[in-house]
Length: 431
RNA sequence: UCCGGAAUGGCUCAGCGGUAGAGCGGGUGGCUGUUAACCACUAAGUCGGGGGUUCGAAUCCCUCUUCCGGAGCCA
Image 1 (cartoon, rainbow, N blue to C red):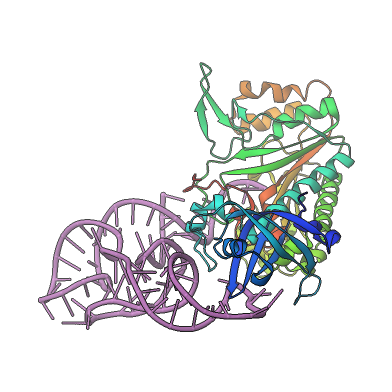
Image 2: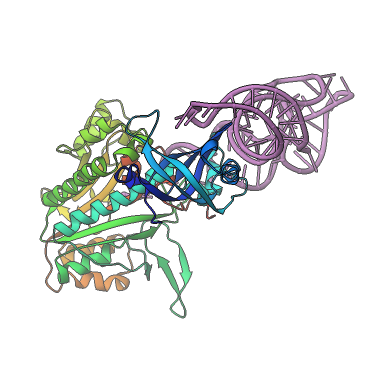
């Protein structure tokens, strides 16, 4: 008999069908057994009623354990008690494997235990919902880019040097060539791609060896970098805004039940799909100081400042025109003020913090070289990057989105570690 | 790296100086509609390691280990 997915059950009412999956939960009540079957696409209650079944079939249903894998046959029906839900009246139970005692119980567990059992934890409904949202966010980002003339251009993961030179990198021995590093960003390589393809993006894992211990950091995470020729600062932010707003709409549209499982405030999420706020770094500091922050001009925002900035704003906030000292060397100087650069951060509302970092890039060879020398960078290692400013330099801009940060915000969850199948953190590499 | 906090049955926790407890999970039995089902019975613990104080330590002190939360860095 042909397998039907739980998500398609409504099209098979009254038919005898076959469902293949796992036992999420089981309850008995004398002559009745309720099996909650999960098949990846959804869950459905399946009912075994003793008088309708052979003794052996009923006993097999009764002896099932949590997470046993099985094939159930039966008639698809409307749920007897709940509206708009369905159930399966079981006629056959074919057990593929009777699972041993399942480590993850029905009551709550601590994060350490769950992370040590991450390979099993991903089966639980909240984790299922988050992983489906991750999938949807990923495709919404790619959809926007593909529809706006960006071409995928994969940056290398093994690199000979530190891209931005700021954060600590993981290193390894690369044959006879000395040390190689795991990329912390594909951005510099991406800048080469625009001279060939015009607009490009990459989407892959990046690595930061910082000993960060917060709910917003992973040592391995997925980043999408986009880069576009002939795009300047304002248009760069416009692209970021359009992209994020498409992600919000897509998640609301495609992941309604997942958001319900996570008890996500959908009203707040919907409210973020409106024109974003734009503030200069200077205005941001003034605003935060007026609200009581101790922050001073010229400094970067702390976690508390980020939360304070958006507590009265339903939409994300761009912070633009930053002091050059606290931003990367490749950012273009602000023509209005040589002490500033045309960089922007995007801060998500509801306290979720920074999700994007972007900037217009310095396109003048001599200014870029001077800046690199001032930061004592090894110029020879970056000759290829400087070459881009010698052979047909153009104004260009780009930005990077942390996929897990965005998924954390969309899902409305507390900790970034639940947004990736296997989180890598300072004290965790297993499983 | 710095500042806090925690470690007690398989899991989540209570107990905080005087004979180790509960809920869940496990086992056995009961129940025709259950929704982390329920009811009864049952097994299960060198109270993270080491040292100290005390007549007596899971409980107080020191130390180590592991983990959690936060800061800095950033996506």
